[in-house]
Amino acid sequence: MEYGSLALFYDITDQEVEAMIQCFRMRRCRFHPGQIICTYGESAGEVGVLVSGEAELVRLDYAGNRTILERLETGGVFGESLAFTPTLGDCVEVVSAAGSEVLFMEYSHIMKRCENACAHHSKLVQNMFRLVAEQTRRLSQRVEVLSRRSIRDKLMCWFQLRRLAAGADSFTLPFTLSALADYISADRSAMMRELKRMKEEGLVEMDGRRVTLRTGEG
Image 1 (cartoon, rainbow, N blue to C red):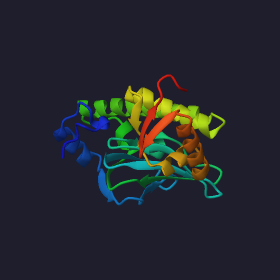
Image 2: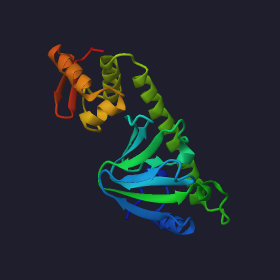
Image 3: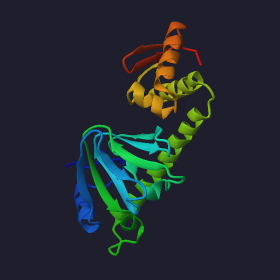
């Protein structure tokens, strides 16, 4: 397969990637929609690369409440070494949101000095740091959304972030409305009522997952 489209392997040839797969003893696994890819606390020391498909980083608290911490698309990287260890009885899982394929590698293989001083190994480490910086930026945006007090404020904050990312007033939500409720930590029924009011007030237009914000609103 071609690896050039994956951010972790940017500027590394497919031949060099295949060599690293052998050298790092990486393993490739496929997952069905809804299947748990890994559970933090049980997969310490491994980094996963989403070669294809989509996945969600999901937190389940002690009461069973579900919160989407991050949406992962093809090329996304995840792993306990890159994030955090669950505390206070929380369970953090990476769940396949669509048919997906993941390449697992041990974190130690990435960070230890390559015996052959391979240039592509250094590139891999540089790419990993860039991805971690990008992940930090996304989580910062998430904190910005969750810091808003009302469901409407959370929705408008999220929509404005999507508008900026798209560079247009119209954009497509990256996940379902049920997943959006989980993402903003809101009751789905309450969120749907608020969306209905926002549409009636002319703040937003929605066609399925396609959202249009009125110019100048929010």
